[in-house]
Length: 625
Image 1 (cartoon, rainbow, N blue to C red):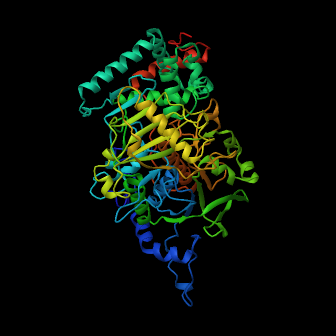
Image 2 (image 1 turned 90 degrees about the vertical axis):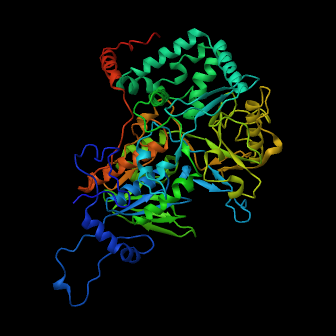
């Protein structure tokens, strides 16, 4: 009998109550759920620390009378990594009756987690909240929001999803005395924050300054390039635009400085976190297309810009962990995966190292590798790689640095009520002032020593370009120098047009992601790098299923419909990995819904026409060269 998912009252279909492609109501059989509820505690205890599949002990004198229809033990899955990909895989598997153990070397949530600033709490307050980088959940996401809806949160009808809030405006901050470009984010119900006459004047001046400096023929050309990509068929995107740098696609070299800064560099470095000279047009164009549709309200889960209304762990990760534990998921925190071992045509075990340095081998029926690619590929030995050459191609995937720093302020800065993009900053800074978006918290009363009233969270996207204060790259600076340089670049972008937004006297303290080490030395390190998308690398990304029957891949590097390293990609890849595992097991359980990116029906006829043109060697009909 099919029933709704335990504890959620929801079905797997995204807004439909059905699972795509199955034609049946999702759920878990009542008999299997009853069995799990009755045996989880005893079976887990008998399995020991590493959760080996328990054996049923025979009772003396009762072998002949053993029940013929005793329920089979649930299949055991070892999930390697506790970030968004690993927790999603654990969630989907546990709901389908699998016994799941998650191995995580550091902390649940991975790059998405928030963390405490050590030693910052005073009295009964919490520690100051910090993070690898601010969380951003745009309306182009569909798979991740579906998961958020299925994580219970007290007082929320739609679980953690109800903790998403939408900033109503954003800003491109210009340096060198240029007025900033500040504007509302289009979405029904967004009236925008009240504006003063001075803010209106500055917005108009910023728009006109950009309009004057951006020649009309360049604007028209960029629109033409957007139409070329929008109407390009999948074959042209995969075979041509994947191998064309965005810089070349938009002809940036021939254009004005303003065109290059906003439309070439600004889009790629600050949003996609990669260099325009290297970034695949397929990646940049796919993201841009999705955001245009989102802004138009087409195929969107919500507004183009959404953030959490609390620090990430409070709003999402901690409730997720609690829910997964209620489903029977076990966690081994502090355990580092060292090697995925291969033998007899399958993964035979995984070597892990414990918090005290002890080395053991984990065994399970199936294994889902949910580590970031730069960590995962270190665990794949020659035998495993030989069994599936796709794994070896992952060595060609490229990662770069994008890391956060937080500044705690004793006075709230008069900034835009949303994200600010410092498009003229050498280190490609983006930022958001957070406390106003956390209405359930009084920042000073709830965090730190009571004197910090806000957290300005900043992402540093460029680590290899000299700054304005020391003339050094971020990697060449010490941690203190990085903080001072970022602060100086923020002030250069925000304090340059006659108004003081950031004042040195209001800076309480700062915190730089601890995953970055060795700064200012010849060998800086970063434990939390970001997959980037140079031309051609999409075709090196693996599928979730492998040629190894009990080994599956989950992570933002796995090939899924959203062509970008994102939480959405991590979530979608985990769903694909679980589906591949269910197929391998021959499981009758409903498959995970994996929602593709939105495609406008009225554009499809133009894409079909372009497919014909591409196959006979013609350019896209809008391509003027």
